[in-house]
Amino acid sequence: MQPEARILPVTPAQSETRAQLALILLGGGVFLAAALFMTLGARGSWAFVLQFRGMKLLGLILIAHAVAVSTVLFQTVTANRILTPSIMGFDALFVLSSTLLIAFMGSVQLSGLDPRLLFAARLIVMTLFSMALYRWLFLGEEQSLHRLLLTGVVFGIFLRTLAEFVQRMLDPNEFMVLSDMLFASFTKIDPVLMGIGWALVLAVTLWLARNLARLDVIGLGRPVAVNLGIRWRRDVLLVLALVSVLVAVSTALVGPVTFFGLLAASLARLAVGTTRHAVLLPAASLTAMLLLIGGQTLLERLFAFNTALGIVIEFFGGVVFLILLLKGGRR
Amino acid sequence: MIETRALRKSYGSSLVLDEVSLTLPRGGITSIIGANGAGKSTLLSVISRLLTADSGAVSIDSQDIFRAAGPELARKLAVLRQDNHLNARLTVKELVSFGRYPHSKGRLTPACREAVNHAMTWLDLTALSDRFLDQLSGGQRQRAFVAMTLAQETDYILLDEPLNNLDMKNARAMMLTLRQAVQALQKTVVMVLHDINFASVHSDRIIAMKAGRVIHSGTPAQIITPAILRDVYDMEITVQEIDGHRFAFYYG
Image (cartoon, each protein chain N blue to C red):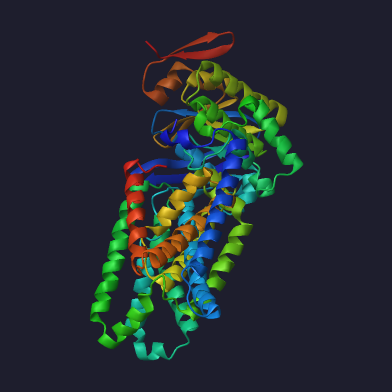
């Protein structure tokens, strides 16, 4: 019996109740956090405060959802619970794609471009890259988690360093444009990008909602899934493309966050105690929202910090990553 | 009918399947025997499209399996491998219900529920249906996976060492269940077996493999002989006939 079986529900009825309770509590928590975020410590005109904070809130919800869902999907197709798109370097790939775009096209051409078109270009370059780079890792007939983990970490570092290397060779003006493009934060979100982000993420979510059963089958691992008629190659590539889109949206809005997705997905798994995507995906998304909105409210309103949320979340996410690694990583 | 034509497969520089051409008729139980590394599991995996061959072709009822659509093939052929580690946490009933996915895409119809219950009854799992897989013994878990492949309601069932993890009682029960499925439901079962005596007693045909080739095939009476077993396993094995079945003795 698994060591963690002690904290998991014992009967299907318990499991059902536990999952429902967890979803309700998480939903309530997010609602409360959002209400506090919108109203706490507001001064001056309410119309202004609500509009200003509402934009921020929409951004936080979008990022939380994108990061959490991409992590769960990624863990489903790779059949593990330690790896996340960011550990495998997906966000580094997005940074690299943007850097290469600037390096080859020049900032002058790019600054004249419609930001939506620019984002589309970055997204397409990144998705193509991720398909080319990662397909051989995930489509193999026999996978070793350890090989995947090692390759992923090396890939991540390689891509990050490559991006930095190209950035160093950029003309200072172009580097400025790039920095503007890359280094956003949880509190400074571009409204145009957010519009595109919402549209993309809603489209992905809609597809997911119609394919929950298929994701459950994919989660059984390649041999069982192929036996049940999943076209593994096509479906895994499709899910990886969706992961690319979600990572691109969140990276474009707030820059790379390495361990946030892992933290949210792991906490959600613990909370719901089931691997059914119909429960797990919303739970992960709500957990991420609670962490992000709750954390932002605490730090911004109670402690009057502005930039520390990313650091705090990364710290706890990193701790979870280490715990999972030490537990042997299979589950 | 399952047909393979000149299948070749190698891992790195070692050839695991060497020009395997084989015809397995419909109906009955076929056992694949051979020493470790003879290519038995690889052959089973290639036939069931879990592995791709380097060259050659596999067809089922004259349909090429690598061209067939996934769900369509999954309603015709079910396969179960040896080592079934799941990342998901499921009850027995949930696992068996997954067998209906090729038919219903996750929305269970009344016919599906009936097939699931039926499969659980066949494998004596009804009392365990609400237990989680991680609460079961290895043998019970193995039976749950076999029940999933039965619930798939395919003509062909391919099993890689279905007796793994099973004690004598459960191993025999499993073989009897499979025989019943073959007789009552006209299934075709192909399985890799290590225990040649189970193969001898319960198979209609035996295929013997060595170094990636099929070296002998025929009825148990034809295959379970000292000469052929020496050829397959490179050791002296006595064969005795008891109650009309041939048994190999290799314990001494």
